[in-house]
Length: 221
Image (cartoon, rainbow, N blue to C red; front, top):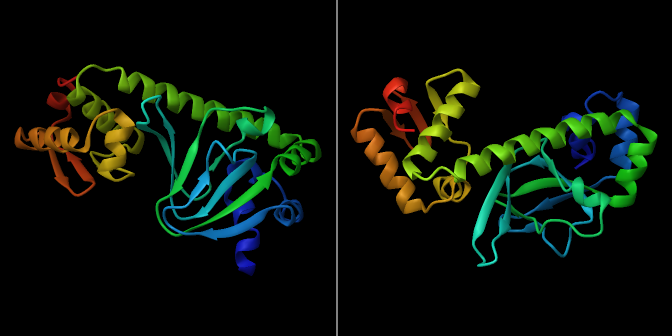
């Protein structure tokens, strides 16, 4: 566990500009723990801390009034969640579920706010991170608002290809999570992917998607 005592601070972008001594000081007030698959590390009852993922995977979601899960994002090592809620009494009802045995680091509200006072440059990095998250959430909202499920899938795949600069992309989540992310069911998602494959627009191998004809695929918008 000794090596994990400062791994979180070293891989999180908002701390990346600090020297090693500063990182070690931050690590000293950071709580490290290993969590099992299926553990809720964020919930409406426990939102007064910053959660940093060191190893593993976490899905962050909200529940609709009908109790339906809406995936917001998948956390990868170096990602963090909960920063907004550290500055107000009540926040959005976020949930964070561990998808595989993972290692997380947490900072309490008081510890995190003290860090911002000690290292004011973190505030600028934090603002950049929050802006990036807001942009991604806006993109997701726009995606869900597209009427055709096929168009949502095509838009999502083409966005992945645009970001990577490759025609072969890897969906960064299980199809069950992707279905929730774009606002459909796993069955509908699977059916639509098979239809795109049968039309020779894509080739699928598990979560790996090869775009065979991006021009005609774009016509599916």
